Image 1 (cartoon, one colour):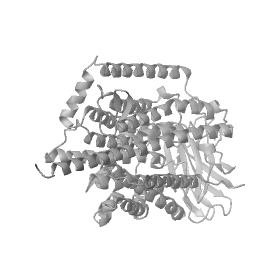
Image 2 (tube, one colour):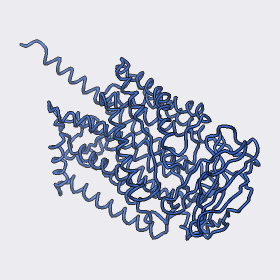
Image 3 (tube, one colour):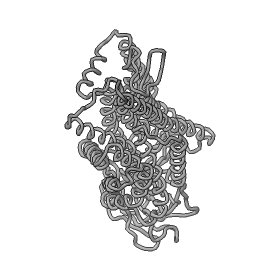
Length: 612
């Protein structure tokens, strides 16, 4: 069976007119921002100052903290909606004709620009030699900026750079239609980690001379705690976007990554939330996550009519942390973080499996459990320790020996890196084949097939992670995944028709232990990459190949390894710099809070001394 594909989008980067338009647009926005910053700092405009004063009157926080909080809140919500919409569009329709041809990109661009503006507003707002907070950084002789504001701006810039670099990446290496493309990770990583910066910025504000506080206002204190818990919920959302391919049921990597990423996000965020924000904060953060992700999933899937997705629950892990906090371990934060991470990596993972197997496309089978736990548990312990360090830093109580904190962070990064490297290690069988017996169903306009498939004897064991058929990028909400039914030691069959024809890419996918491989069933002709159609013949035998050759058909796999390594190294260095930035910012704020505490205790001691 052969079908003519619809007109396909180009590969290798955006059209030149779109690049020029975006460059001009970015230049205009930058010029406007620079004009506002110059006008504010030279007192030529006053509305920016009045905005900060108005927010301070309502929140008690100075403008250099309240204005960024407003921008970050809006930027992350809009960027999250744009991001998940973008993933669903690519999953359902394939690649687009460039950044301006995808409506979701406009939301992402707004979100990332707003994030950068948030950080820059914190940097620009203080004027006339004002020192914002106790950990401010000197920029010029009379210009100081909050360290967290600098970090947020760096996150925004890091994410924004990912957009033009993504186009460069496509020109060098072809289009990598995966969430885990290096430049894609820059986009989501910068946005996701910025939430930690807004929590830190708020803490800086609490120790500033402009802080009005909440006093004895019980309602204000309750609202403050809820806002803080929502901020940690935002951090949980940010750390969870890396899992989106699993959420959509089109993961291009081994399933062992799923429990590891869930445990890492839960341990870091929920441990920090409960220790810092108090009783109920971990549960509140998890509920906030569920509500926001649920609303976004409804909008993307039901309102926009794109590919549907689900998401982790985290409530089991949150409850574990709340129960653990009832013990005396709460008074020993690092031990609490380690034990909390262990609980999340084990019991929390089991609870999450119940949810995963109920709502996700594919269950966590016994095939992946041992390796999955060996990855998830140490990563979760490291993340829990880092969450405890974040809490200690926010309270000015980081370990006196700096090497304690540095060792914990370094080892956590190395353990996570080792787990990621292990998860990426996949094998492809040699000289393995699949023979299909295909029956055409459906209509000429909407062709579908049923098939039986027999694979090389002994290739797949009794309990593989998955043997599935995936059809995607066929247009609209075009994502179809189906777990095949086993009919014999080496044979499987479909249970429902799957689409082919048009732009559908339909393939058999197998994951069994470390083996991650696939066989094309139907692939459309793609003139942009000089690829011929792979037809769905009535009876055909085809070789198993690496999944990436089919799922990322548009990639140029013949690129010089040296160039590929250099490009990935640059992205890795930038990512490590962002992680180093949050560590340095927390350490600076912690040291300043500790010194301020010592000063206040000394003042109290003098005030309590003998009276003349």
